[in-house]
Image (cartoon, rainbow, N blue to C red; front, side):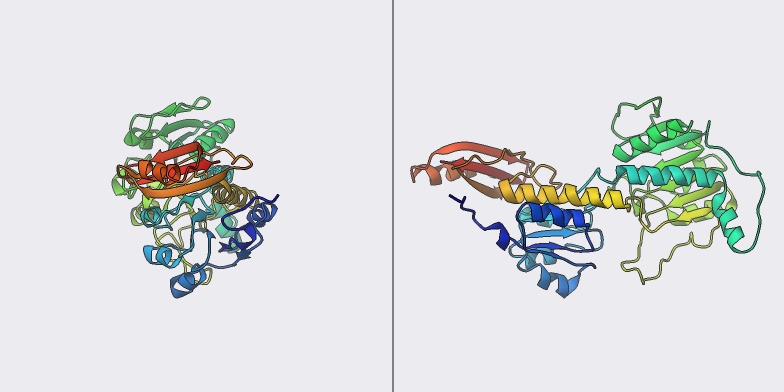
Length: 387
């Protein structure tokens, strides 16, 4: 006998925007979700509101912004998947109060970002950006002056999380000496050494790479004062968040020669579409590598992200698991046993709700086989399996 579902999977509408990888579609299809629509571009305004009105599961990348108004228009939405590391394109508070968990892929592009950073460090120490530019213009800068091996240099890693620590391991294999700074005590990998202050790391490092999240504390983390503390001739790399570095101050330090080079992948203001002009004071500086927010943009990373986020959405839809949600109490639930019925309930965390839920079942002589409860200061999430 087929199991009864509150809503058959072929009627659960899934919308994937911004050309999300085929791997995500494969996950949904294998799990029986056939009503999957995929769009190449981002949505906004009235078009977004209209499109999400009857969607149950929504997948987005970085350009589709889910404001409180957009979430309010999504009357049937039960979960959002950000097919990216960041989730700042979603109003997480509004989603949370609407009972909509938001999932992301915090680790799937770790290797891709780390490889790009290491490649840029080598290119900058060799002076490749300027030599490449000159060759394209017919020049021939065949000189060893200002060109260095990375072996024996000191790399400072700011933010020793999944990406920062992997950069650290790869850098050591190239012979770099690695220092790291993090606001949380982290166990060192390999021979890396933790530094107690950001200022000390800046003073000691020949190259500084940033791998921090977007928070109130990291906004403007590297400004004119911090850059002035760096070694003359050092290089700076940012593949984390666009508001972490004061771009004007960086441009000034590059122009004066205080810094020998930089590689920037993220910016305070970025074009929303490929035809929009990219505007930055770093344009035209020959000792700078500028990349269009592609740290995690490899085929391998996008395929991994597609699988990771789609899996989380499917698990939530299938059995109520919220493990990996960034704005919601996390409940790692077992697969529902055959013959049982599972109810999920999202509520404000106030006294008396659980007893009221139990009374609903007990007054109807329904046996509770299992109950799972997770709360935070605002939200309660209870899952009940009944006989």
